[in-house]
Length: 306
Image (cartoon, rainbow, N blue to C red; front, top):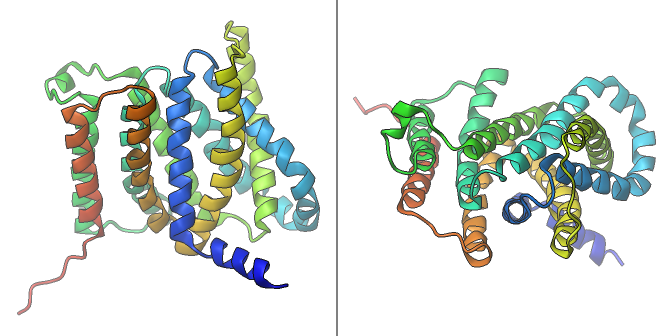
């Protein structure tokens, strides 16, 4: 009779599996976000995603929220910040960027996430960068620049970067902040945490959706759009956020952040297969530099023997 609970505990105690599945679900999310760009406005897609997730969560999570309410109320400011960064802003910004850039670019830019997490850790918690981490950041930034300039360094002189790429980078910065701030999450049940942050995040998207609607943007309810909206409510939202939060809880933000670079590995294959996008040489160069930077950042410099 205890076989299933034991199996469940074993599954949720495997951070590398949980974080790998999270990267897979998020990579599909980015590809699908690009697929329906122009069909579903970005704020509306984020609204449907998180309002739908909240409606599914509330019947199951409400009793946990009631039980943990004293702790939730005490830590309400950090919960609001986590909702704003990880739910409201990141998703809307990322979906907006996908209207102006290819899925491959958006996927590759995600690879800089682990290093941005390291920078936020330094800024917020005074975790000092080692020489290897600093060198890794520089190498990875070169990779990002290779992608943004399409392999033409002279483009930096003109500062004519793709509009969508800039928004995607902004999204990465926001989500890295959320990842680091998870360190401050209150000690409440995972269902309580997810229910509160998802519901609050969905509510905070409403003004953005209203502005978008007032500007004349509408959802085109095609079968493809309905299928994508159904997917984003469940897999990259409910399941992936639960997996990601658990992964960070088990191994910490910096180590969990390293799984961001799996997003382009999964997603680039999907973009080529299903969107017909073609990988360019600068994508390969940029990705190689980003991965090199991550590897360099993990090295430990040892003093020379006397």
